[in-house]
Length: 492
Image (cartoon, rainbow, N blue to C red; front, side, top):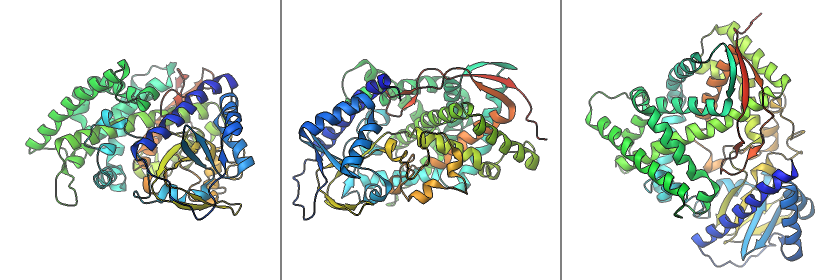
């Protein structure tokens, strides 16, 4: 990693860590309880100064590697009166991902999502309501029966979009995927009629809403900044648009039942209560945002790595040839499931570029962890704990040559993530917090990239992109320029 670039990112990173830790602590102030076992070793005083120097000059991975080597898999950084405990390695993450909400939670660190999507959904509501809303998402997106329904609309959007490309040319991959995936999300989540009539306006407003993911808005979501004001105007206008759509759906006897919006309108809580208009608006905005934003980032990183690695792109092209020989040009849900090499290629890109560099939790009840070296520590309530995904995804005892893009590490012969343990791969989080949109995300990206690989010769024109750490979800920095030329995939 370039030291100059890493210094900029990790300066931002440290401020982010400090601010979030303080923010969580303010959310629920707790007196530390007495521990009956050893607590983790602490980095403070002169050691803290050394840690900060390493963070700013070499980067987060180097800093954690240094502390991991000298202090072990569990250590606490003490600063500004805050105790931030790092958990390094999958063997000590069970409680982090599976602990009860009363014992370990996000605290109020995700408050920035409230002005983006509304106080009626997500982290604007209590845990019980939020958990039921997650069930609504899962019912609409995670079940194979629902995923199958979305394949044909996705394919139609992809074919129509790429039909507008010329015989050859140069495009910005990040921009093109962002536009296409917004079309797909609008079609599958809102329905064809809404997508046809209102796409341009909705796409523009979601671009403004995206400002809510900027680090300044994450740390200070209610500050009267220009970025936050644009976010709030976009939220207000989107709410008006979706309110009209929901009212129209509820008053009409002729409703398209297959899109996600209708699933959310028809959803009921366990007490029999129907979802309200404001709840449906917030949930569909959250899903649209995630469906477009995260998939665009993952799809762009996947493409950049494939086109930067001749061996990997040859492997995914050969897989497409085999599928064309077997099924012709037909693609459905079952064919997508057979795209194992492409699936592993996406998974490897997400391992190297996880949507979040670090996950945080607030401890409400003491718990213990045991490291693979056999050391046992008690984590006191009041601590903020961190799972550094960026580091845990690159542990060399789990992932061979972790800095090398190698999708075959997830193939049947190696399965490095499964051998590494239940929490070795956490791009979509794990346990209670696993993202319900994981299967939908993979499906979207497979539909897009299988079509590109079958119909175009592609070449990365610009240098391999650096990472833009100015967003909460790190994305490729700047334009990702790709040259294309139409072709029919040779299958002999």
